[in-house]
View 1: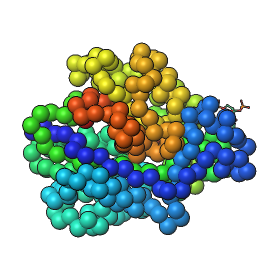
View 2: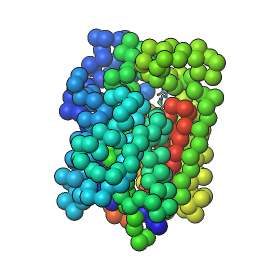
View 3: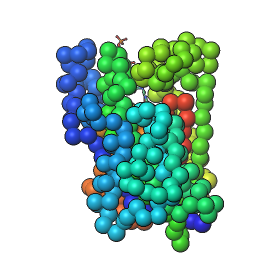
View 4: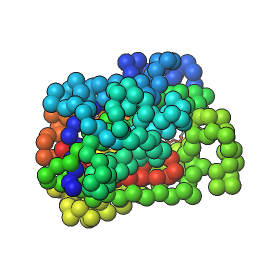
Length: 322
Ligand code: COA
């Protein structure tokens, strides 16, 4: 059974945090942040607004902006997140309960910034197996709740947001071949700690906040994502020219520029959400998709390469038709 993305919806909290917000909290400035990351602003959720709330608002927006779409028959919900309200119950069950969807399988997956694409890969597999027919795939994060605002090398990066895709069977295949992979040896280079204070037998800071070794992640991301884009093109029998768009996880504009240069892609083929939302982890790819759709860039029939990467380190990529 073939599958397609029938609709996309997003939500970002209303509070805009410009770069200047950090100026009296840490030693930084607007020029440094823009030149090193491309970020102009990001959104932070309210103190009583959590990842499940962002998920529900993204689904509501999907329904409001796609009049032909409803949730009747949704039989599986998968939420990619590393910033859930709580580990249990899952964010997926919160959505199931809010929209009163009976007989719906629900899971959250922890694949960091690759979570949304991992969700698409799972949804494609469930539909191909014939066991499910209507899958909601979300990437949603309230990273501001887990940000160490004393660490100037990381706190300026993160933002909050959510995105959802409805995946359904289709006559023609519109979710093509995928790649998934990981390199757990880099576990301590990007982590959000809980109880344990070791990763791979190495000490980490167990304070419930996000920590990263920015330089290591940067280099890994440029090297690995360039390879994976070429691999995705090869397994889908496509050339770069036949692709309309590339949506790489918006971690840092300089990573996206370096990958574009490495694979020989013009920068205007790369769709991003980093400028206005910062690094929203699993939400960054649907946010970029939404911006590009609303600005008239993405059109029905366009071929788009999606590639997420993040803590683990892990990655997942797929080519889809809009
Ligand atoms: N404001 C001003 N100066 C800052 C700063 C800030 N917010 N953060 C760091 N600096 C300083 C550093 O202390 C350093 O000063 P020094 O030269 O005196 O030691 C200088 O700026 C350069 O720091 P460096 O770490 O080399 O910057 P960078 O160009 O590597 O950028 C990141 C730092 C974090 C933006 C970058 O490494 C990055 O984005 N990495 C990838 C992170 C990522 O993608 N994570 C998520 C993956 S899903």
